[in-house]
Amino acid sequence: MSKTSITVKRLSLFVAAFAAACVLAGSASAAGNPFGVTMVRFSPQTSPAKMHSQVEAAGGLVVGDLSAIDALAVVPRTRSFDARLTSSGSVRALFPDTLIAGDGEADSPRGRGPLERSDRGSERRRPA
Image (tube, rainbow, N blue to C red; front, side, top):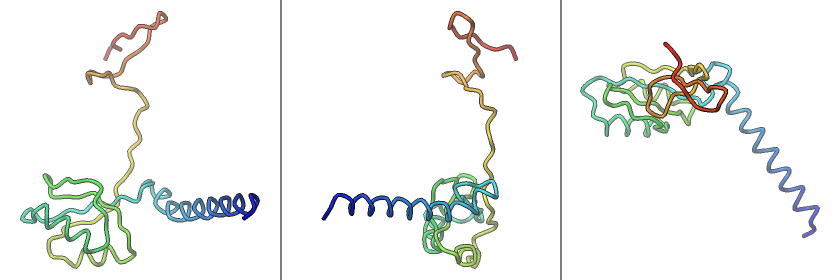
């Protein structure tokens, strides 16, 4: 196989993968949810194991376990995910997660709020 043929195949594969990623991410990012995460609220009597199994059976992937508050963060992998999951009697609500942008300020290592650098390079606490 020639070197040119391998290069063309790699470039074609890259372009196809990039196009697929754009198609899959397009609708989610337009809605302020670039990762397509959906929040699923369950009835308080639902065990964490049952929450996980219902999401997986409906065609979803659990990306965050919030079972302490009767919820899971999931990424649907099928078009029928919502309908299949809401048919379960234990699901109370299903809604897209919203990305909340931060203020862009770094917190200190000890979590005491934003830091500010002086002209000499040392850090000091910014007044509240």
